[in-house]
Image (tube, rainbow, N blue to C red; front, side):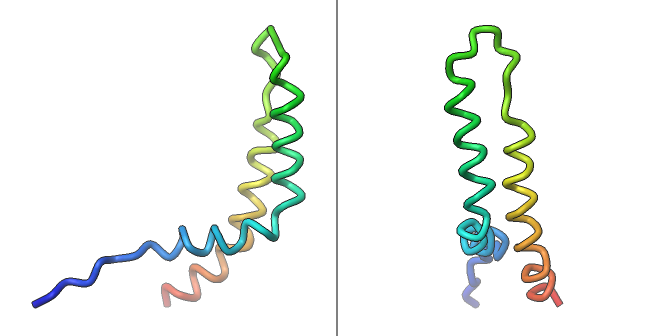
Length: 69
């Protein structure tokens, strides 16, 4: 009996959705560049990071749950 390797469809769907979220990714990358010179360590890009992943997740969720039915 051969076992098939289980593939996580979420990873593939995330990769497919990332191009649709380029605006949020560019905002995050711009923030990262801005805070490189921060000496206090207080600057962060958490908001932009979560905005990017929210966009990706919003794209992935309907496709992922459709595959799980």
